[in-house]
Length: 158
Image 1 (cartoon, rainbow, N blue to C red):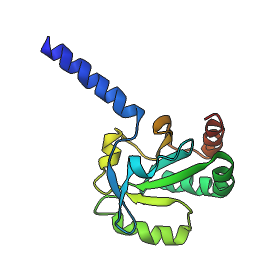
Image 2: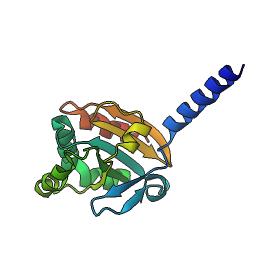
Image 3: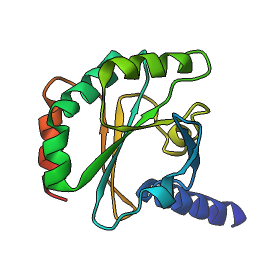
Image 4: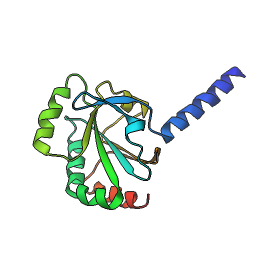
């Protein structure tokens, strides 16, 4: 009986954890702590957490494609994209040089221990989590050319 109760509680916790962003702290590019729940909680604002890495070509393509529409989308949809780098200790030194060449308007966070990635059970990148009012509304995994239009259409329904 205890085993069944344990499984029920574990399953409940797992489903709850997937509805909301985990309450974790990651660092920004200036090595300052950023609270995922506290710092991204404006009412009715759409937050897109895009998990990427410097070695992931589809991730870079996705962020480039969104960048072309970002100013228009952020104003129209009241949204903000947060680029969460999942580069580990071997590749995190490549993040700043890559960003210097891109001029992206996104806030970039460093998930160097991959705690946030692990808490969301992310296996493959690129991976996007769309959050509104502290609730995970949409998840996109992978990127193909033109997928940003699907993202835009989905964001308009929120």
